[in-house]
Length: 132
Figure (tube, rainbow, N blue to C red):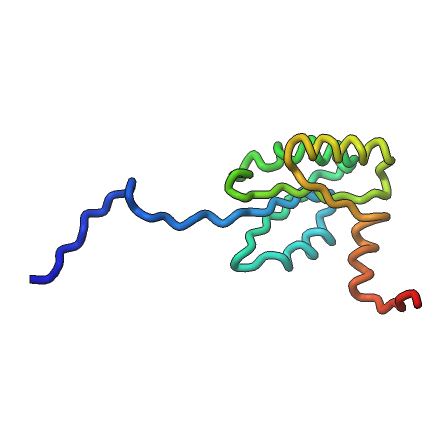
């Protein structure tokens, strides 16, 4: 007689490990989303969440980042990361310092472009000569 199947026990079943998700909170709703969509792969889950236009100050983006994830599951212990992406052009040094300090306290990461994300994005497509 052939071997019988073992009973399924959900407590003992090997479960597939959850892939970490990278949440990107950004102030722009066009260029940033277009750029960060290219980071989505089978092995890298990226969720891009644009902020409303009234919250473009650096410290407001960082302080409201977790609220933007209220619909999503955020598990930093499982490898999830939360990135706040914003421009330097409208932010002063004290605002940037405050945003950086708050992000560090909460375990978030920040990335800011100087002067703005659109300029940085454009540099990917414009030929430029290196200094010699």
